[in-house]
Image (cartoon, rainbow over all chains, first blue to last red; front, top):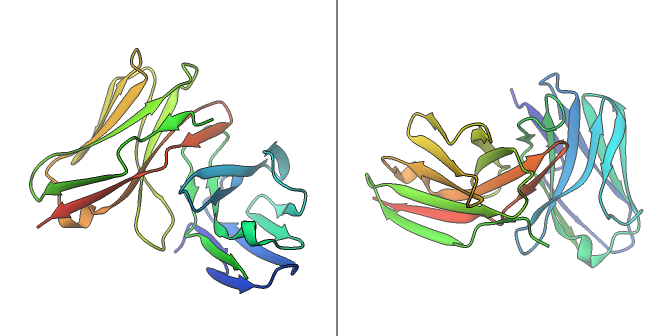
Length: 112
Length: 110
């Protein structure tokens, strides 16, 4: 059973489109995250939610909007996709803030 | 501004020998450190952690060493196995956020 699962794994889309990546964790964790790994392999946090509340919102364009319907889900919606949004997006969770983070398998987004 | 650095992008080691992966950080407030292993097309998998109150933590073939004064941690894998070939990320944090290094690609040669 996958602990942190995200869909889709691969996504190719045109500039200007709106897309969503879904994430679910079955670990019973309180905290969920979205990380972005860019072409230089930097793994940087984008957002962090604790019990459905936004805790961390790094400098991310407001075209990116996370939504947490419950503490087991954290979806990422991206509006008006740009070429520079092409990256691997990892969902993750931890039991609480500052605890060990467990990652999903990643979603490879390519904007053409 | 990179707070966690892994200065060796790649490392090759013979099977059965020791692999040593290094990581440096800049923020002395960091108090919890993690190592992750990542295979291609998969997410990072948690390997081992250490808190700042310790200087060593061991789990099977994996040992993490922390030198707080040097702001340096290392991951030792003994003995190295071909299945250990992957990218290894270190992460450091305090409070509510972790910062990741850019990874070291380890190749274990049979």
